[in-house]
Image: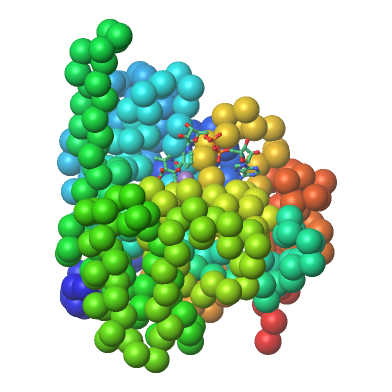
Length: 370
Ligand code: NAD
Ligand code: IPM
Ligand code: MN
């Protein structure tokens, strides 16, 4: 892993410029509330944040024909400390062009190889599994974020005919696998976790996923105090439902990480409360809720902003504002415990009302336990 350079490390930039990209659908609804929480935190803890709003969404794409103007990615890379995104996807853009350009573009072009997705149950009433409590669901997934099935290499031959052939390749490199596996072990060590589990499908993907097997156990040997284990991804899904308490840290490839984190989100109450960070240590990173743009809920007040707020908390932590990050997380946790939530979590509040209460709790410090 690269060693952060203090002169470019986003933690040390002043002011810390944060690019806000609300996205489409409910992305806009939840981002508005996350911004309120960030502004409240900035005021309370006097954070050196400068939020800069960008207009890139499906409307912008349909009107201009471009997802983002030339040079935008370089500006994010060179002049911003962090990027915050709502969620992209609009039925008027059926091939996902702008979503792929922006979301996957940021992950790939900025080399954000760590997709960090914590899975934490804030209140046992949110867990769909019988008899499970907060201590049973508390693990993190390290999803490889720049390779695997997402590289877009492939094609269609004899497209649209009865003889059509479709090929799409997975790409796994030793460097790419090693850096995400090492990150997972280092995180476990630094955060007092005992176990790291790698998941693949090496019984079928004999070449590509065999690389994961070899690299994982090589790196594991450098962390003798940590228990290293493996499950095939089908078995992992079964175990996540059957006995989620066995997991501390899970590391896996890009597509399996996508799938198991939706399952993980369900264990913590649903997609509305799941957060993520797309990181490259020492460089600009990107933060977004795990959920999508849920177009049918856009503007209805049904979208839960908590996943977005918790993603903002991950961002504050990476920017060096641990106390403010804890303030945001505790504001969410206290509302969950009080049942002051949107309908997906069993409450009766709107997106705006939940966002307001979070911002107020952050501002007053009422939610922060001493
Ligand atoms: P989705 O996450 O948008 O919605 C699936 C379901 O989850 C919703 O119908 C809703 O019941 C629930 N849900 C999701 N977020 C919620 C929230 N904040 N509050 C309450 N309930 C919530 O997934 P989808 O329907 O498969 O995809 C819709 C679009 O979003 C597609 O275009 C997809 O490609 C895109 N997408 C984007 C991202 C992203 O930008 N990060 C992630 C996933 C999907
Ligand atoms: C996610 C999403 C994206 C992914 C889509 C929208 C490309 O599902 O962030 O989990 O597959 O990574
Ligand atoms: Mn997903």
